[in-house]
Amino acid sequence: MKMRTLLVDSDETLRTNLWNLLKLYQNFALEGETDTAEAAVSFVQQHPVDVIFINHQPAEPCRTSTGDWVAYLLAQTHPDVQVVLYADTADWAFQAFRSQCAGYLLLPFDPLALQAQVNRLRYVFDLQQTKREAANRSLLIKTRIGYQLTPVSDILFVERSNRKNRIVTQSGAEIHPLGYTMNQLEQMLEGCGFYRCYQSFIVNLSKVSFIRADGSSKTYAIQFDGYDGEVLLSRDKYPELLTLLKEKYANIDF
Figure 1 (spheres, rainbow, N blue to C red):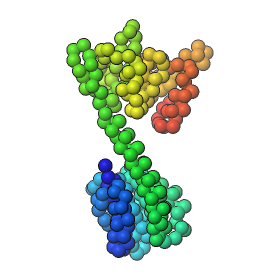
Figure 2: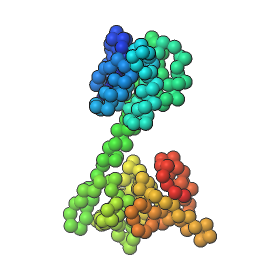
Figure 3: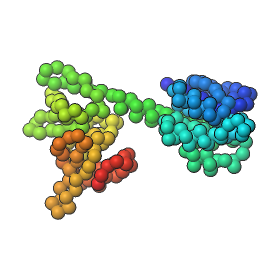
Figure 4: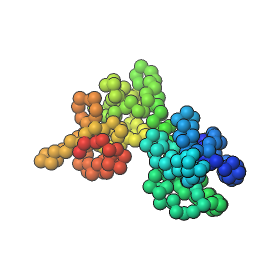
């Protein structure tokens, strides 16, 4: 899949030259062109865009805001959009990265620097696509009465008890898989944000709301929003799970 690209510069010749360079990599699809920062923001609000290449000063200061303003604003409203700033001086590079730009290029474009930037854009874009696919992924699960298609994002946890597995969903409904081991279910959920917190439990990290740690009895458990109950957490995996959650999520109570 190609990255949908927006070029922002009032210099039509520079835009054309840049696009001719980008076409060589076969990673980009030109979604649109604008000549001011404000027009770029408006375009993103109305069209799907993955990458923006923008001049630090797209047009005369009396006509437009700067490119780093676009990067800062979109970092708040469209964090998946990667913004690459370019200019004929390195003076604005620090400001570009403070504004969460994906990169800063000097004019005239250096082929090696552009190649490195394209590689980085592609890497991040592919990670984003993998994340989206995982979020929208469903499992086809064999049960006693047939096959059930279940969105992965709806699963709270998987439990094995008395040689049987059950999958508990966000709605509280349960699915009883037939003929799967826990290792097989863990493999099916690999790459979707699940964690084997205990020999008999696999949990959806994005659904965890609270980690209960009882120091006196040395017992640990995981709780979920909207679910009455908790699942066991291995004492050995307690520090590892905390690290994972702190890296990925900010709304977990410890």
